[in-house]
Amino acid sequence: MRRLARRSTRRLLAIAVTAALLSVSAGTAEAVAGGPGTERQDDAVLLQYARDTWRSMTASVEPGTHLIADNIDGTLRTRSRYTSPTNIGAYLWSTVAARDLGIIRDAEARRRIGKTLDALARLKRHEYSGMFYNWYDPVTGEVLRTWPENGDPVHPFLSTVDNGWLAAALMVVRQAMPSLRDRAQALLEPMDFGFYYNAESRGPDIKAGAMRGGFWDEEPPGCSVRGNYRGRGPDVFYTCHHYDTLNSETRIAGYVAMARGQVPREHYFALWRTLPDTCDFGWAEMKPTGPTRTYLGIPVFEGVYDYHGFKVVPTWGGDMFEALMPDLFVPEASWGPRSWRINHPRYVRAQIHHGLEDAKYGYWGFSPASNPAGGYREYGVDALGQDTDGYTSDQERTSVDYGFGDCRPAKPEPASYGDGVVTPHASFLALPYAKQAAMDNLAKLRTDFDGYGPGGFYDSIAVRSKTVAKRYLALDQGMIMGALGNVLARGALHRYFTHGEAERVLKPLLAVERFGF
Image 1 (spheres, rainbow, N blue to C red):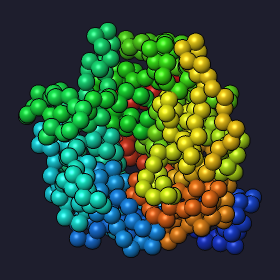
Image 2 (image 1 turned 180 degrees about the horizontal axis):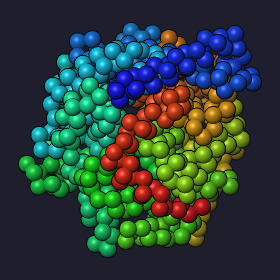
Image 3 (image 1 turned 90 degrees about the vertical axis):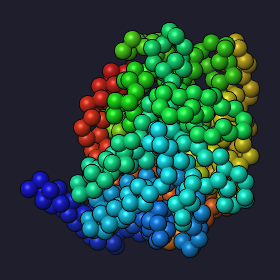
């Protein structure tokens, strides 16, 4: 009976959303153009965006292996010869979202996900941690040792955050697709994030730590740290850096690990909100302000940055992806009323302010994406990130330096900005916090540029030169599908991911904290 009820609920939702699309076909053009429209019209436009985005994802899947490629060209004909756990996870949760939105039927979703789960079961993994390698050939399923685009050597790496996104997708699948629950759980079960966790990363006085960025199971060139936090199997070679910043996409790995009991809850409070306000950290973007509070015995400096009056907990690079991608799975604004509920909308408004008022691009939404000039690059709002070099919003890398109190003098703000690069996925991530602004921004990007193709919005646009990166990235399309799945299906990904242990463990952590605004 419960299974029938779930199917009925999904079918009613799909019928309602589809009916909205059909009933407003006459008014859709006005909504796309940015004119006034009802909520139903807006949702119909969003559903059409989802349909087109889904087309790019299905075109990216290799028919022989059922693994999605990292990217596909704008004509939906040429796939890349590499993929990652993040890309595969994005395809899994996007398939669930497509089912929930009525774009595909439940049977097709089961078939697609089932074949990809089979493919995952065949991929080589690190035996002792259960983790997946970072790069595979989607055509053969083999671990990459040579980069297909230029022949450079690849040293097989096991990334903390990429495995975090795949694990999050498996947690979604096991709840969203009951008939596939056991298979998803069988893939998830061996993944031990404690293998990355360094309990001593903050020193002897802080009784919790952070995760390393990942490890190699063969000694790589360059910096690495030999060790084995779980004491299983041979030593591995960890990255020299830790993921020790809270407001970053990397927190998804911590959410998964804490929910599954693989790292202690105190880990959440061992992460920096900002780096300390002392001159030892005077290289950071700006001097933060805020009180120190204690949670679970961990002292937390509740630092915030002030960008043109927007007081926020910054990300590392100042981009939308870091701030809001984990929010696709954990309802942070709902569970963190004195932290994320304030920070997320304020961070979005700060990005809007930068694009429209500060840099005067006329558009906004800055996040790592394809470089319209070729390749891939990090984009962001420099002042919203802790990294002093920052992720900048334009091709010219125009940056700011507000100084660090008496430790480092400030420099004048730039007189102007250059060729700003906007990525549509940033607007989709912002939908829960600035829906009309996001709808208007997307409508302008669609009408003002050659920025929309057979698979939805192309990956990025340099707005002053009007140069468009005409390709689709599985990660960025997956963020769009995840965001639309939540907005149009009433937080479906939230419910799937947090069912059970995730809610019991994570909700109290987010509820207790008060950011230092």
